[in-house]
Image 1 (tube, rainbow over the protein chains, first blue to last red):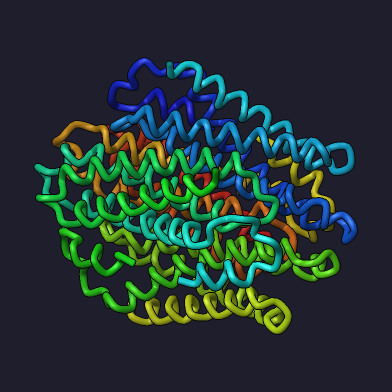
Image 2 (tube, each protein chain N blue to C red):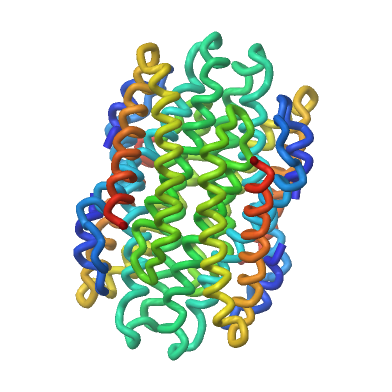
Length: 136
Length: 136
Length: 136
Length: 136
């Protein structure tokens, strides 16, 4: 992904942000958003008798996809940086990734897409926590 | 907007949510997202000598549009409700609306679109705070 | 919605766009996006035996919500207008609104949220077609 | 990116879609969306005297980010597939990627982020065209 190249070519001062933590967080958010969109759709195609117990999983996948996508966008902007916005949004992103990972893990042994998705959510949760830690 | 009708026709239990506060918050988020997108673009069309001082306004408008749009989506879902996700996201939405209202207000006397946008952000900030208050 | 006010306060030339058709199209796109998000979630909360036949409805609702939201954003920008982008996107939006209205109508007699949603999609389809007609 | 893994674990029939073309198109859309968001923000941080000539670039970047993100989402869903939606949306995505690549290329020699972004847009335009070709 060109995340690193775009950070490198940003024409103004990036401040004292941890570039590695920022890069990783953007990449994980972008991937988690795509994976959750695909997992919600895969759940929807499971057998009839599986659908009722996948309701909450589909819903949380949708929320996680939306919040991760928005977090990736906000983190991709550096002009007029506002630490309060970044911090509260990362908190929300961490929360939804944890919820979605927990939910997907409950179906992971039966549905492989939920296993893959739980892993993506867990990586994104970690990346948000790490970046949040560097913001002071 | 059909927000009220969609809440009324939701086929399952909505829990003890405050429907009025929820309806208002969804409506304000949706309107604030559209207004911020339009305000960022209006700023971009201001005279050459105005552009440098509108940088932060454009950026915050973009963040506010993204976070409000995502908040409206999450609040429009009721299946498998997770209070932690709603609460942290409302916190982020309130934060970005306050920042965007503060920023737009600084340009309100000179640029009318910033005045309209500041008002939309302030209404959305209030609606988020009110809904957050009802969540206990 | 402040759509009209934001168009009125746009600081540059809007060209010879039909403001009424544009305003209506933005408003319908914004409302259709919210309604489709809510309808997908309402379908997901229907009784167990209803879920299998609502698969396609949920999926089309998700697509329609995404495309309408993006169309509303693109239509809210006027700076550096590119007719080719607007035209092809309106075509995609009209297509997904028609598909979603057709699908929701099949469930309208049984699920009231599908009736409300079909009407929102049909209004949005009309508004896209009308705006497209004015673009020459 | 877990795009391939999510396609592999999809529980129902994917039809006779070209999996390689689909995977590549989703990946390019996701990357192009992130790159365009970052390029719009990088343009916004250029020197005061550069801002006026970057207006159209910022605007087209925003459109391209929105349309690519939506295209990635729609392509990540396979349940209840509707060829008309996919086809018209790919057409819109190809159009905006071409416009954005053309615009960014004009600033590529002066602003490196525009060079990186033009390349991402061109790759995405190609991937959309290729996938569109396989849809028949």
